[in-house]
Image (tube, rainbow, N blue to C red; front, side, top):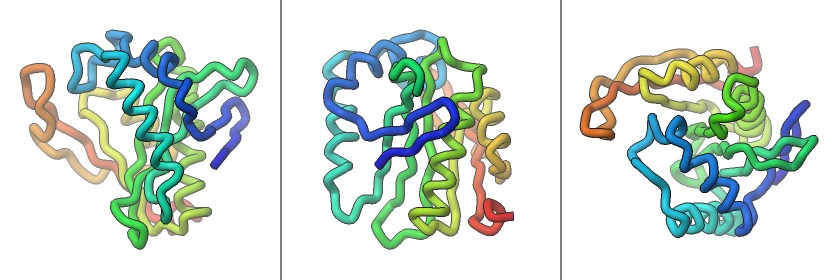
Length: 178
């Protein structure tokens, strides 16, 4: 699988991608809205290996791809769309961008491409996403791509020694087409 946008290449992960992922996932700004205080090389290597293994599953239900700058081939994040099972008509969208590239529209560009893939190629009926309520940047990305805020799940995620609210977003195929 490979998708291109104006500035990005969304490509399959390869095993050698893990050091680039470790670099941005070790940044304190990235870690702020995650359950982890730090990232270990072996954990990131295993995660990338899992993404590579997902490419071979038939029928495929998880499409997690590397976000690469077209001009430099620098890996700056990842995004994906995941179905619970092969015959599901709904999927969940997720993305992450290296903090030094925040605020440049890359997450929006990548997420929009994944939504188009989900509705256009996978034939989904609904795509959902969620973010920590305090992560205003991520919420803005979801709103920019046309997702609707569907509700707040109070104290849904336990991390960093406290409960966090999450905001749920969704989009229907008819809304995407319209």
